[in-house]
Image 1: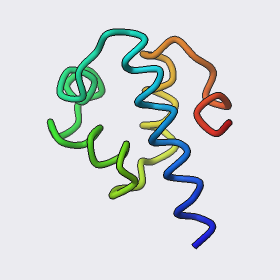
Image 2 (image 1 turned 90 degrees about the vertical axis):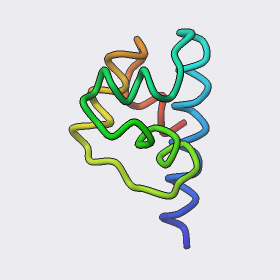
Image 3 (image 1 turned 90 degrees about the horizontal axis):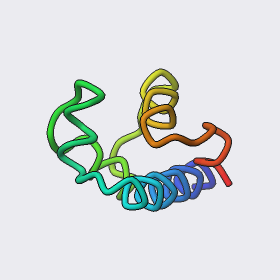
Length: 70
């Protein structure tokens, strides 16, 4: 279950940085070329994003990927 805790933390941090950027879940999903519900699923730890998607999300949100894990 420790893996789930990591994804919960990542989801919360994505939400935090997304809101700071003023982006909706749907808009961020669109920018990363994902299903319009993808970011919502990731933020709720219902889906596990690939490393490639996490890197892209961090770039768009203007943060270092390590900040998504803190």
